[in-house]
Picture 1 (spheres, rainbow, N blue to C red):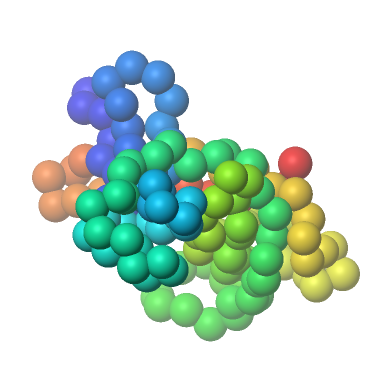
Picture 2: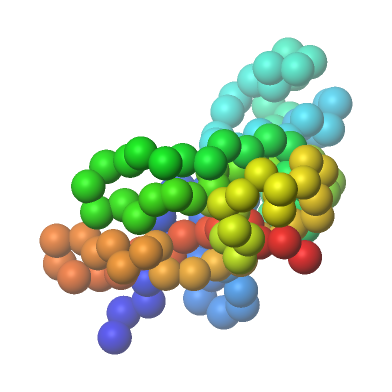
Length: 136
């Protein structure tokens, strides 16, 4: 059985060790981004951006409870934006909590967890690994 494929480019699955999210950090000002870039949009530095392993800990910045989606996507679910410790802001789904505003607190501590991407597979039958947030 083959290992799962990453659902997004910034999810890294090493041969050994745990999966992680990869950001890019500016050596000039310390800004952290998802995705590769040549120039820092915060300070304008060129050639000072290097890959960095992002933290699996963070805090909920904002969320939305999604009640309508594409066919085959179970609703409601919680779409969230999380500020990771050490830098980086990531969007993903918040799991392990009821989609009820009374049970979700802004700033609540969360952790990144890696799980099967809701049963999705490519046309060759390979599964995908994705990341989610859950309360900690």
